[in-house]
Image 1: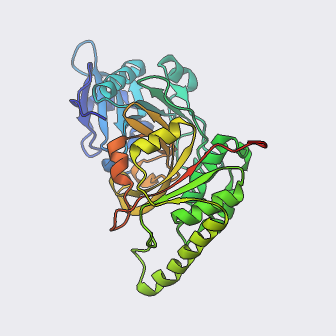
Image 2 (image 1 turned 135 degrees about the vertical axis):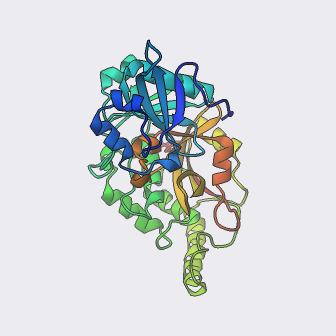
Image 3 (image 1 turned 120 degrees about the horizontal axis):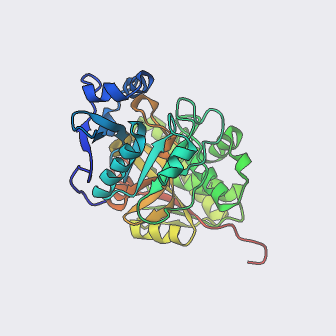
Length: 361
């Protein structure tokens, strides 16, 4: 998204430093709220206080703690205190000035009526009791340019290695291929078992597993190398047998009529795919967004001006990153293009899933 001055039309924006609380903040923020703000190290998410001065100009009438993942096109309100409507309006001004696509609001202290009065829509809570553990009980979103995009369900992966399976399941739930109630741990681990290259899911194996699980769903794998992938961190001996399995995945793809396109899937092509109703499982590096240089699957399912909208099945609780960040997450095209290059070769892997075909098509 375009970079604009870090200042809203009203209020003030300043860095949030837990070691140096402003006196104005202590006068309006309840103790439990401040404790929550300071319970984790939010520095990776560039925490800011957006404050609205009081009538006398000597203190703050309202304030909000605002954070966001790097390289993303949104701002997240953790809490708003004092004059909440004024603080939230100042955050909206701040986001518009920066050209962001949306503002989200964690539901720690905000309720449905509070959010609706300020133009926010409730987001669907995570699927499964463990998915929202440690996160807010509710979350809200306000798109700043149009109506945004359709909302899929959200599920956090239950292991460190089942991101591809969760992304595929969420894609198929949104497509109507499976019911929402089927989005559970058994389905997650079962699909991962059919796709894994131990423990990661490489693109061809994931595409074949999706096709086998949902034969009515057209699948195309995009992978701009014919070499084995996702093996950089292993020893030569560990790479060898995983490479054999990846070659077997290519044989399986031929048998299952899953095409493997050797061209690099471009961002305009991803936009075209989601615009026609396809869903794109895209392999990213998390280095820029979360600070981990590891390959990771996300689901691209929507587009808004300047950004693609993804579902990220991973959250990092230690930085204050919650399901509200990872759900309906807009990422600028250029940032997503840079992230979608993994390992030393900068390869791009993707699985494009079409709408389920009906009998007679």
